[in-house]
Image 1: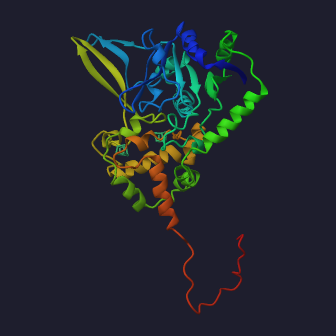
Image 2 (image 1 turned 120 degrees about the horizontal axis):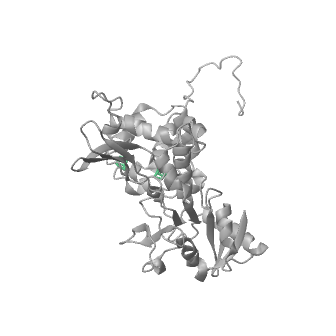
Amino acid sequence: MRARIIHRDDVLKIVDLLRKDHEVLAPFRGRGRDSVFDIVTDENRDQIQIHIANPYHPPKRYVFPQIERIMKIRGGGGDPRVEPTYDGTRRAIFGIRSCDVAGIWHLDRFFLGRDFRDVYYERHRRGLFLVNVVCTDPTSDIDESCFCVCADTGPAARDHFDLQLMDLGGGEFMAVAGTPAGAALFADPIFKRGAAEQIARRRRILGEVRKQFKEATTSWFSATVRYVSQGKILDKTWEEIGVRCLECGGCTYVCPACTCFTVRDREVGAGEWERVRLWDACALGGFTRMAGGHNPRRAVHDRRNRRFFRKLAHYFIQRELSMACVGCGRCTEVCHGDIGMPSVVEMIRRATAQDDKIAPERPGAAEPKGQHGSAGD
Ligand code: SF4
Ligand code: SF4
């Protein structure tokens, strides 16, 4: 990958370059802690934020909109005219965090990586340019719910971006090109050649940033993947998790890696209908209810367990080459029942820690023959 140095005062000029042939989205401050991705205009361009809490509403909506018309239907009387509708706007997302870059790559695998290619997703994705900003400021970029280090998606994305920016301090940013389109921007004189010292500084900063993540959130994640994959979590643990779910769907809607959707037809005028695709959630009973009314996952805890199986189980990791959790921590922030991913990992840690196979020795019991184990058995 090629890298260049850019001065802080020139960083927003990248947005100007991209605006020539893209609609550019970037992070802005909202009310209170809120932050939001919005379209960059001449009026708001100077309010773009580089260091800011990652918006709750993930940028996945630019490739997989919350509600999207996929076709128009006109006329009736046995002769309806069906017209697919596509949005082919060329977009660039400036300031996308590493976890969300991984989220989009996960969606790529889901919508485009198998036998069927989703043409609606493909149109959004085709012209998309991603400018990843590495989280380096512990006071604004990194929340206590973040665990990208554990999901191996951050703090610096290793691939799947076009351009990556990292604040090196002292008014300097390192720009790394992830694709030929990203490298093409280096033709602009705002990008200068760097020195070995800046690469060393980048490594040093990344080492320091990694220490900012809460150990308790992250240390049991891989064991949870194994327990979930092996089906070793007891029903009573899933029930404990399930009773805390209010079935609001919030965890799914803020998740950059969730893919559930449903399709509806609705009348929009005289003799005119449209077919829309909209986000759905496996947490909701209606999602699993089948024609005829039978619901194989009627109990909330069955749907909860399904969500975590879908996110972490080895079967899906093999199929999609990534977990369906990128460690953004948003589900923790929005869940009223405190059963976002880090909390569930912690509940599973506690439940499996109790599952200790070594029983207390009975006084006077003879040691079985041939069972002299060593510490390594
Ligand atoms: S955000 Fe929490 S309460 Fe809402 S559906 Fe998800 S797990 Fe349940
Ligand atoms: S499951 Fe939670 S932490 Fe993982 S990617 Fe989704 S919202 Fe983020």
